[in-house]
Image 1: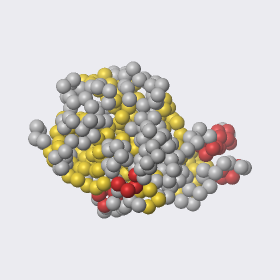
Image 2: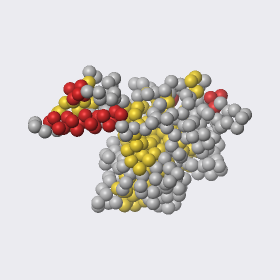
Image 3: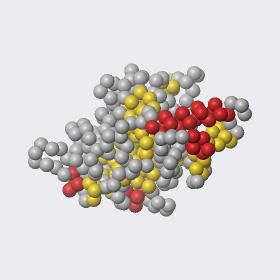
Image 4: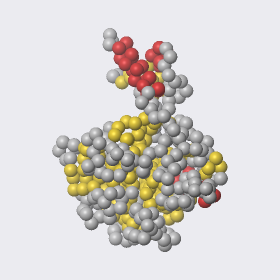
Length: 374
């Protein structure tokens, strides 16, 4: 117990850094018009850079990420640059922990990566549906049971994944860059990437017995309306929510994130956030107005997003220098917890249980990174 005051001092310093240091400047896009209404910012999140992807000889232009559920602490990443593998790294991005290779016959234009549970097993889903010119029409979702990550004994694995071929219900060809999986209904959701028009959401139940049969997606909804895009005749690009590049649903199905990017006007990019009500379908949730996250700032080729848990998610991108930053977003603590520490009052909120230090609030216990202890 003699070391406890020192531990408290160290913890206060950690809390101060979390509260006032190491965070992004949160330069955000203008307020978004969506379904005809100007949306209010969601200010419940804090963003900071947790790492830099320094292993770009293994992966180029990260367009999809998913947190490992089999080996917590790692993030799976996928490239859309004609690669036939995915890699895993930790959130610092400095070292490759695992590489999973697939047969080169697998369709290459991969645009997103997601994780989910089916029949008690963890799966990874790769969206092989990029089609910038809308001329291909050869679309599929690649899936595999998530392997364990062992950087020492199995740094490289070769697997043959499953492959679900699909077409769109309108019979047309579409470019797509976003995929998300709902654990509650075991459903895959696919979102088109449209230039200067409204993006659309489609769905497909996940099953292991589709075989070579081509599935027809089900239309779910549009993301906004055409009039939201606000095109100006004075050489100004559309300012609304188009060009969707990534999406994810939290593991418990409660929260939905959909992001876009616009490389023409850097400030016109958003992450949209929906809280799904109990008993609500994804379609019903998306029919309500979302909240854009205030802390999100533009990322060059910002295409990748994934949930860790209800209080944490990540984004990364394709940086100009080839080494993209990895950003971590965490929910803010209750009123007062995120405030700068002016005196030693924070010490009175710290409590040690066993060997773990927590923050005590009127709402309950929180870990040092702001996650509520249920």
